[in-house]
Image 1: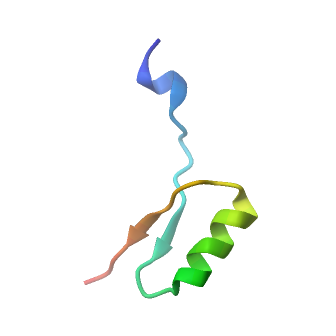
Image 2: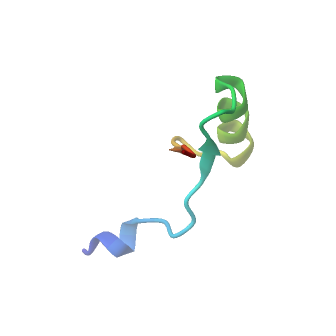
Length: 41
């Protein structure tokens, strides 16, 4: 089995300036267990 068989190609993220509540709401709505946090400089 290769990694590409298990991975997802759609990556979900939340902006770093959003609240924890916003992140949790997105996770619940999309039924996912993790998000990447995107920071802008």
